[in-house]
Amino acid sequence: MENKKKFRPDKDRKLTDQIRETLRYYHYAYRTEQTYCMWIKRYLAFYGMTRHPNTMGSAEVERYLSYLAEKAGVAASTQRQALNAIVFLYRDVLDVELGSIAPVRSKRHRKPPTVLTQGEVTKMLNGMVGTHRLMAQLTYGCGLRLMECIRLRVQDVDFGQGRVFVRGGKGGKDRTVVLPEVVQSLLADHIERVVALHEVDLREGFGEVYIPEALARKYPNACREMGWQYVFPSKKRSVDPRSGKTMRHHVLESGFQKAVKEAVRKAGILKRATVHTLRHSYATHLLENGTNIRMVQELMGHKDVKTTEIYTHVMSKDLNAVQSPLDLL
Image (tube, rainbow, N blue to C red; front, side, top):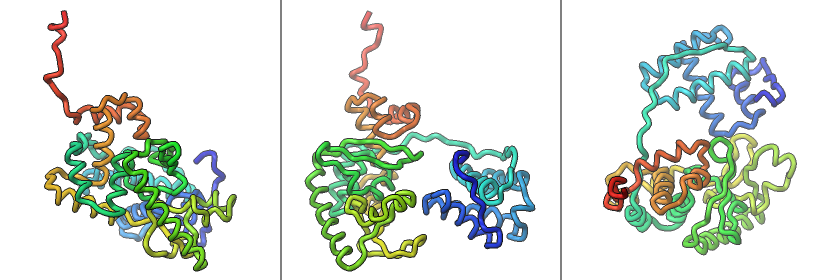
């Protein structure tokens, strides 16, 4: 944020409008905008919505964050999310330096991830059909996060090289993964239908899709190009909440999540498996099949190999194949 020009929101506007204006100036994602606004409202509601944040400071912020840990029992990541939102309010909207904040911290409980066996993955996939099955195959076959799959663009799929380019993953990082051969023809047929749908949109005077604001300014026609269209577009066009334009957005993640949950139930799998479980299973199965942990780290987009090492704790280990070093003397 230090490298960005300091933005001053219109102080005559409502506080919520100032927050949104600032978030959009700095090109925060729409989901982040919703999350930050929610946490700021909760922070103000904690003090009865009667005090302007200008009249409060680090002591009030510290008290609220401690409440989240001690009384509300939120996870460490949730408390950190609330802190980020409130710091953004003071630093970027109100231009107030909070100083040091030392709240009671939520305890971090590092649990081993839930992982499906390869047989369970097969059963689950066999219980799915259509687009949701293809999405599940890509999520497992490429180790994608939920929103990485949902936001995949047509130009991110390279059939020639057999690669999928994951843009703007967690932490804003890009990475490249292998496109499974088993889904290539299915995905190609699916994209043909997406092309046909886009051509209908163009004929009817639509065809725009959301692209980052900086790119939209530099390439004003890119939003209508086929390469920028979502691989998994929504069935219906909708009005973009920021621009007010009618566009075709990507599918809602809830539909995919429900389809996976139902497939897990039908397969008789008693584990608490979600879409993200497919990503955990991808990493674990790669390690079980002998892939170097550094390569798995790169494919998963992990910043630190320690994050990848957690999958070694849930691998299927064949103790019969282990030989005591004493027997090797």
